[in-house]
Length: 245
Image 1: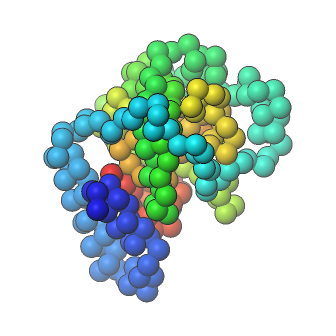
Image 2: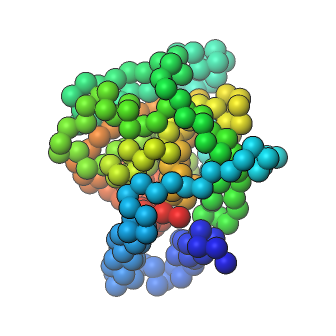
């Protein structure tokens, strides 16, 4: 079994099984320790910036399925969808010197990166797609992230099970060259089921970290007080914050 598949399987086991054990404090402590070791081991294997594998065009999957939120059923989103997301804006703020408000035209005008990568879902399925968008690092450099920032938070337009979806990563992954704000999939504007008009691609982590329907990016010093304080929608429900593959 490949390491990526093994890690995905382990993550699925941790998140779907052993419910009674998972509710105990010792198990939670053990998971927290394992997550820290996982992140250290992941970084140690190739340094903080090893690249995820990239594939040829011939490897692109015939269909890139959507899961989790596959639409945003709000009047505001419908209005944006109706005009082709021409007025959609991505706010960049928090602990930055120069907050930004980027339109889709601004996003498209930035230097672009196109990468063909494999998306691995914690549910056990994978798909290969070609993603295009600007790298997150230069956007953060334009905003001027302040020294006290430790994490980058991603705000989304969708609600899942009635709660706002959000995600986060550390600064090393934020500046990873394959971490992009994608607006195209397989050469076409991002479909609604895959997060139109903007989604995060965090290629070295499992799929639930790749937040869709992005509305805001914030530099923060702590994840405390955001959602339930665990760094993401699924993390608040027991998933590991660091989901490296």
